[in-house]
Length: 279
Image 1 (cartoon, helix red, strand yellow):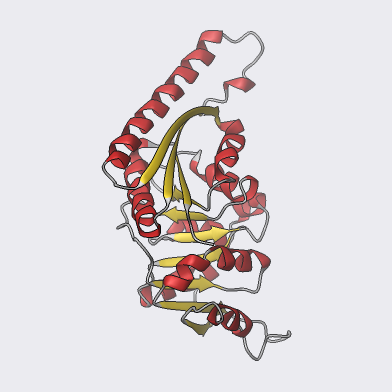
Image 2 (tube, helix red, strand yellow; image 1 turned 30 degrees about the vertical axis):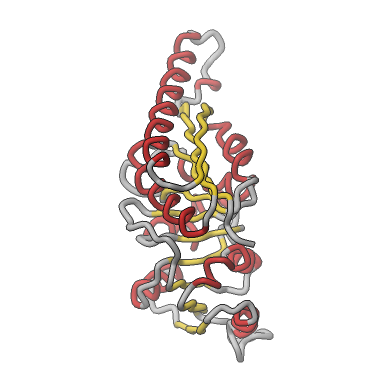
């Protein structure tokens, strides 16, 4: 299935330019419709104030969130009107504790959700739960775009992080339109198990599956020569000049990854190229 309906959830004016530019480039390349959901977020969590707190405080935080959503919409309309793609823009306001419901309601009807990188300087606390809501509640693939990256119309060199997991396979299936159009796709297997049904041909079945879909695929089996799997995968992506990394998201629980770290969180922290994820 082609990507014909794309969505970005904009919550931070400073991050909007990179996300909108990438969304427009992909929508133009795929002849897709691109929607911008401009969400003002009340980050104060005033719903948890003690009983009898001044109602003016609540109203002030909501007014501030509404103003942010209108500023985001103004930016989105300015970019999208000049883009030449089919587009739509909508505003909304949500408390940060209720963010997931609003994001999921839009993401579940999108083929691809394009969002900013959730970690780094001047990144709001709402970006990470926005990504998680799109992946889990919205059941949509997400393309995470690092700040100030050059937009790509269609990735020509793609790296797949493959570990035989269900999440990785879901991501590969979801990314198929990108994979079929790419000039080169490299399946990267890091420290494959020495025991198991696929020990003699790691990544072989995935390669066969992809080749039957017309994907030009190679397999790279790597040792874990750096402390984290994400370090090895990211270094390989740079060495092969990849335009995009495809990987499964949150093989462990989100809570465990938030506290202890994990491949998803580590990749998103250090990625300087777009990362396509699904769960």
